[in-house]
Image 1 (cartoon, rainbow, N blue to C red):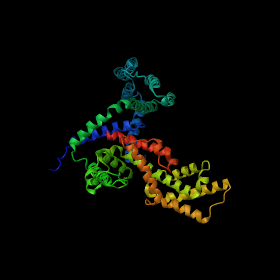
Image 2 (image 1 turned 90 degrees about the vertical axis):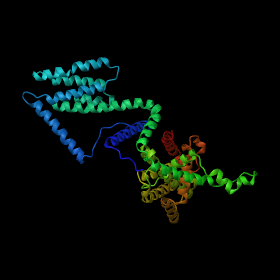
Image 3 (image 1 turned 120 degrees about the vertical axis):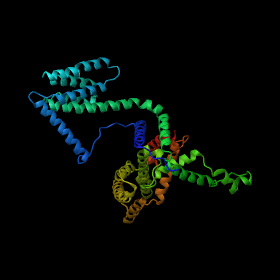
Image 4 (image 1 turned 45 degrees about the vertical axis):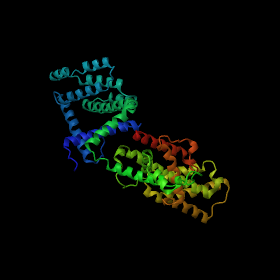
Length: 443
């Protein structure tokens, strides 16, 4: 039967659930997660509307306060919001300070004073600034002190309002950091519950995940159907017959299917089928890992090609490999795979310059024209995905990263692939990031 249409309220409810789920997930997996005020491009329509409305409000405030007698309508509204902002910054045990704020910013009394022309805005803002100085994070100390030098009432209220907004954001991020450990203990159950609720409302929402798992299962099945390269000696002939192999090894375990699926994410082609729905919240993280793996593959291949051409004497020169690695990384930074060809052209030139410089420093003869052309050609050929050196490096890196995917995988340094020593630190860091995401999703 066709899927049942959802009402606008149901769609809004689903959107809210996804938003909450995404925020919790991000807090737990991203240690640098911070809430930030919304910002728009300076030339965007949203920014122009925002600036126009803000200017109209503050111009109106200045006009009201400059009138004779002053009109304090908007100022009282701002004082009310400032009071609420200060109260929102208090911790549960700040009972005395809460009472002080309630007394000093008694809105009923403030309105009465305004009606009788006796409202002391200067005195109120002085109290607010003193309270802000007590509550703000150290990073805001200088801004709060700067406010105390302002004399124009409208400008002072505007700047107090702005800095209070920053302080509220600081408090929110402090609360997030404080709750992170607690959330890590409960987020798995929360995500499972919310995800099941979403699945109940949208039962056909996992089509891409099913396709991803089908592909992984087919690959895992084909891999397990391959006969072992060195079959054990002895045993019955039936144990080694094609039929026996097929019947006993073509059904892969759930673990092997998941492991294959997770590894396939590291070679997800741009424009390929939609990402698995179950991994939408981690797509950016996983694609970042994929980009780093691609970059490390090129770096290691460049170093291996250069080492093979230059020999151990030159590559053993202090700092030589580190310099090649640094310049290669800089020239690859932020580039997609489609731009590796042009980057490797520049990299080959830089490598030749470094080789020539080091040969001269060590007192060796310079490379011949033919040898320079050969080295440059080999480096440029790494842009081809079918390049033998690149393929070998890629396989070694992925084989190593597969240890991080398996729950019982070992990833000690003794398992580190040969030829990848120059990128060991970066590859281990990538492996740990990959494992963090996969471990969370596997649960």
